[in-house]
Image 1 (cartoon, helix red, strand yellow):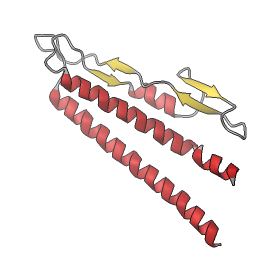
Image 2: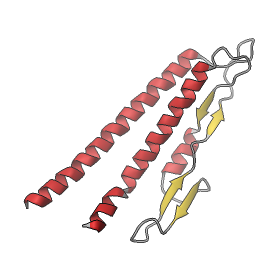
Image 3: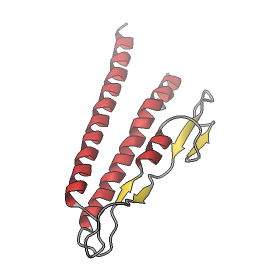
Length: 141
């Protein structure tokens, strides 16, 4: 029973979804910071690096991940993604005060981030319903 408990909690799908939710939360914080600094002269728009996010969340060797073979009881490899990388966004038009925050762009990113968070939440909810259903069927049978 203890082994089953550990395997359910260390499901790579759940771990990846949780890591992605963490990144979406960080992106939402960065967007809020951009909006808060919309009138700050010289402020440069920031965002979370999407490429780095995907590389760290996908399995496989990558310099951005730290691998630990002793985290799972059966010796499988797992990874611990690094902190989300915040980057300055280049190529955006700047105003005369050298600030390049565009409220329309930030609101669009906020909507995309909220949508992604809701989608991952729904997927996690479905995953946990499947687990609960399997547990309940095991009790009945």
